[in-house]
Length: 557
Image 1 (cartoon, rainbow, N blue to C red):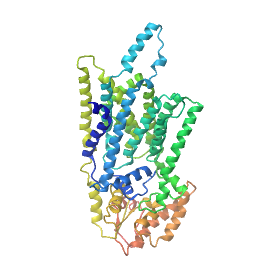
Image 2 (cartoon, one colour):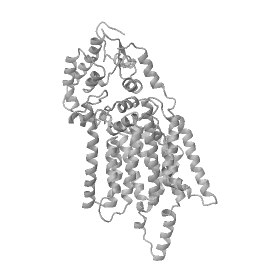
Image 3 (spheres, rainbow, N blue to C red):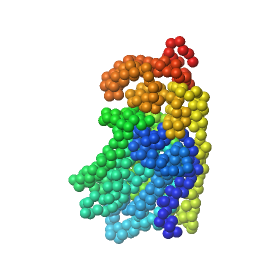
Image 4 (spheres, helix red, strand yellow):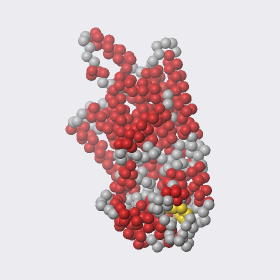
């Protein structure tokens, strides 16, 4: 029993990890999986914002001589990050319950009329809201950890390689050191080691995914409610910046250093300050950010439609927790509301299909609310054996949710994207060219199989949409030498016309589009004598029918 009490959070994470192994994808899945696994395996440059920490750690992990393929290793690492995030979450939840007085506002607002009443009321509050039995703390923290771990989007991150699994682990550590820094008394005025660790992991968070910024509004609330807007508080922030900025720069230096070595996968080719800033800021994707109020409304409706799907019956527990957190730990409750709201209000303005992972901090906040909900449920019934009844009810809720969610997230038999990619490559002769923009199901997966497993490496696969980007021509020449022979003049003219567009300056859109279409056509012309050319069905059904892409004169499909 003592071992369980000492290592409860690690054991919870281990249990969750074992379940995650049963839903782990054995190969690539849709969207970015293949590209990210290839970037980790070859130490390349990923799509914006580059994810240097994710890449470096993933590369090191891929070198461990496990008897698995690199894609399985990458997927396994995702499960490890998510399970580790669960352990940190459970530990943090127990710590918050242990230090619940630090988050309470009741002592300040109570003003009884007499000393006698004061003593009675303080005793009642201490008993009902400040004194939580140890067994309830452990059970509440563990149960809430399971509720979060088996919520749909959180669980999905554990099934395959993605940057959000590492994000879960880092944001959990950031919250842990934030609450430890908040609760620690430091009368000497010296900066706490927890604020130093907070600054460190905040920097690491930003080197993995920029949505780390969504923790900052809630952080500011807790920090200034504790230290006020004083000279000392800003000096402390300055000291943390002395840790934050060097760590941030040190890791992002990876991008220009590695890009200068011309790796196989070199998205954005960030070799100078202009390209580095363009890549880190995700400029390529900013067109979908804050695009319209209609888009934001659609994403908001989607979020609240999916929230019951994320937690199913456990959402009821979280709702109870919202109320109880404002009664027993109002400051932390406000922090959670701010984090939840800032995440949702920011993310709904991003008009993309795979938006779920951007809501992760809101789901983690919901997980923390469920901690308080479970505490309340464990104290709800005032009858004999009520504790066992409440505990059984909570376990039942979790089991029902796992039963509902498991088939939705299970990727253990997902080979369709590998089979689809390999089938396409098996049907075309060696040295062929495939022109496509089917990123989600084919192009991303092909990165992994071609550049990591060396499968059909001499077939040139060209992303039609990436031909719009200046850096892509350098990557094409690196991955498929000679593919651009005869296109020097066309590429030079296109890159000159593209410069003002990429710099947000005035540009000639008609000239740019015409040169882009000419490159696609001439790419076929210059290679058709030595290579077989294949056009993706999406190109034929869309661009060719609209007259936006045409074959060289005299040629047909």
